[in-house]
Length: 404
Image 1: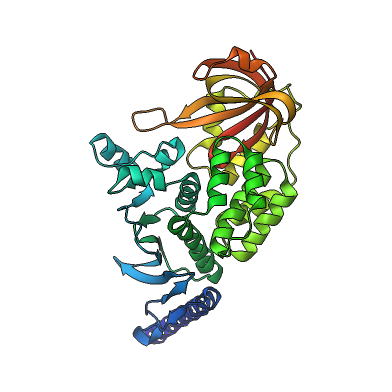
Image 2: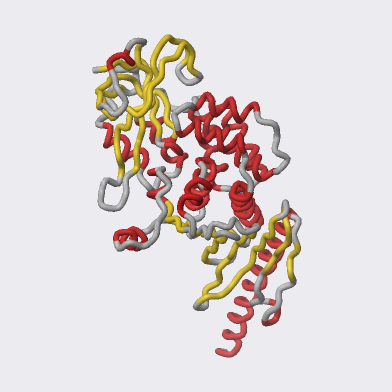
């Protein structure tokens, strides 16, 4: 009896393996067709345990998706190669050992963007050129990639990402490669509209960033246009234009199925927003506490937006901060008609330890004439209403404000 039971169990196991293998074969073949690259035949014992590999060129870049074994564990590996940047660039996610190494004098090029410097460790042969190369749009693209696909590594000649297990969903295979390709295209060629929009966003000028992207002609490169559309969707959402943001992210999700950022942003756009707090009646809390809640390192941008909408939008603030910039305006694309003053205050620094710090800024509308009572670098108190949040840039917008 025992031999028959053993044979039956073994037969069932082989059938299950064969079924999974067939599904994986179909997924990899479909992904190769979708990407327009060649799938190499697998080889293995009875066709069960062969490695997978697909490779080809997309928009002038060499792309490869394959599997490899390490300590009896299968990994799926994605790589995009491009002409050398000539910088000796290496970039990957920050971790505790890297921060400790920084204290011992190991290289980590500081770009001057606290959010990026906290999240990413950067090395290179020419620190000044590396810092100049990493424009706001490139920093945003790299940070998004490494947050969505931890373990991604960027070098002078390629982007590589390896994950445990066999990816057997063709949508996952396609969307992961498309995301990496989008970042690679941003590294090899400057997309001026995307770069300028990111710079304006970082400065707290969402409306100006929106205008730059909407007026830009299509680049002709689907991966550059993908990056533009993601930034456009995030800006639309931050401005409260959920219908247009939802449409943009649904288009991105259709273009890159299973992309985690596109999917989650599309889901946010489809949900009816909660009723905001009655303006001025509910306090938001201390600036440091709000900043830590919204922008903790494990939050993705869409997580931060969900928290902001559910817990902080429309609440009153009584905060103080160091004045970084201000200008008087008669009309502003974020705050509307004036005359009034747009002021940027640093209200909190996250990660205030021996390792790093991340500024959180408040973009504040103040009454006309307030500029006469302030100097850049001074610390001032203000009261107002939280109206918007730009998660990627760690910016909070405050309307109906006055100096306290």
